[in-house]
Length: 333
Image (cartoon, rainbow, N blue to C red; front, top):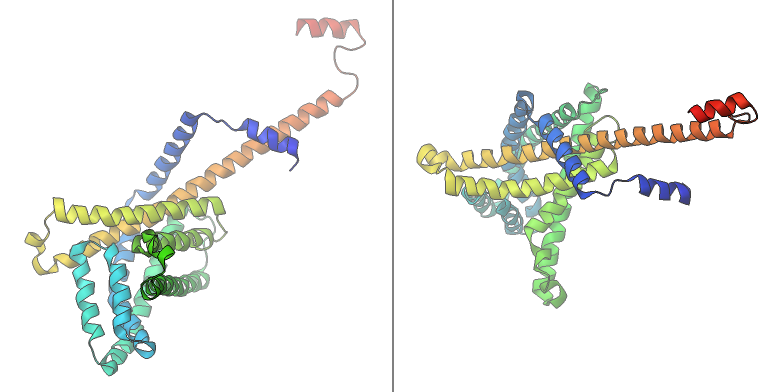
């Protein structure tokens, strides 16, 4: 693109803050419209159910893998730190299960991990299939993947998510260990670096940006739209963690109603709100991409009109030159 075209492009941008505020509100409103509907609620319920079915086998698999290479209590410590993202009422479920697995004999943990691998793999794959199906529905993909392609994509996303979770967890606890063992002052002076909220937000942003880019539609979504949707999903997921904790602790006292299963109910509330946040990120990425396509189409139309105008001015024998009648016509115009 030439310098002249870049300058013209900057001139064409409306720098009025109110204009951008109206456009932002309009795009978010359209994203919310995509999110509302009973069909999306069905996908939210499906994802929440299969995640609930897979999370405890996943803990057993995590502790079983760590037991072959290191102390199982290290896996329990890592998972317990990640559990801080949940409401305190639901956190007790995971802390109790992790304590039991960490103190169980190696043979028992290995046997449980083998059984959990089958159950967890099935539930995780079905959960990611429900997630991708919901995102495809929200995106309104005009050419969805076939049966084989859709299942393969769900499996790839599942494996990539598991690898990403393990990698970020290892880096997070490695930095904490280095700072504590060697008393490294620069790292000790950056408390945000050791916060599970920082690493959770980074991991969710990265994971959801890649999912919106490559897995939400049969064709890749624009990077700008995918990253914006990923950032929005990460922020909303963290906000939903705080909001669900505030709801169950300050507004709805679920313990008096549900008794011993209140922790499971709280976990399902937090999970459904988190899935809604992820779906909103996909809807926002879709609307941003549509807005970008509309801008490109409008820019192409303006460019074509300018080219036709330049061509018309360059034609010889224009009206109004060399004839009295033409002069009179030009004056009347």
